[in-house]
Length: 231
Ligand SMILES: [Cu+2]
Picture 1 (cartoon, rainbow, N blue to C red):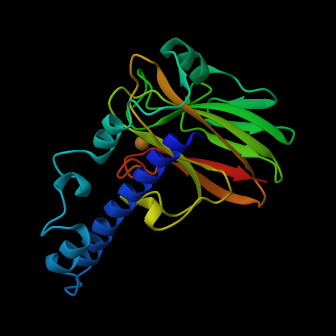
Picture 2 (picture 1 turned 90 degrees about the horizontal axis):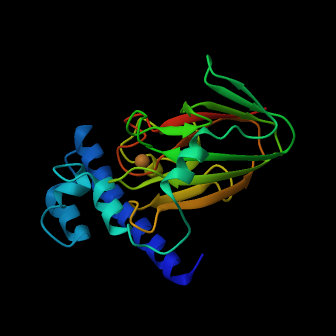
Picture 3 (picture 1 turned 120 degrees about the vertical axis):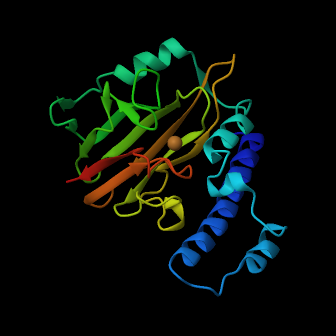
């Protein structure tokens, strides 16, 4: 990762943190607490009110981030290549399309994942031509995921987490990456240079049931989430 790109990632994480602060206050007031009033978070946000887009108002945070990161440096793929990645059948994998499940053999797994590709339901992932399939790997497997943001106008990322946070507007306020390296926080919109891509590499060190989800506010809640089972 270049330092310029690292800077952008830090900026996005800070942005996500700011959104999370606002969301946390929104949640607490939603649960009846009256201690966190507008003035108390206004001082944290640098104004009397949080911008509407942070709260999921008129401007979708994913759309704001997508445009902001559209020209970020980093690897790209052509749209046609991304389409092939989305339908790529990974090696050493048993595919059950009826169950939307991919079960891997061996301890070295590589797969490609598209975020919100054209022709698929919006705010979903595509792996091996399937929507949000369940991915099954053995404990100790090294997993390499080539992730592509194929959405023309919205930022997306992917993080592997323990189950339970996907229904939250800001899931990353409630949980963290389950395995070291199991996160791409946000890639911007495609441009003439191609679609942004990045690779997550992690080792599934503990068995259990996990979720892969998009950390951009609102996306996991809308269904941008799938299951990872480590057996
Ligand atoms: Cu997303």
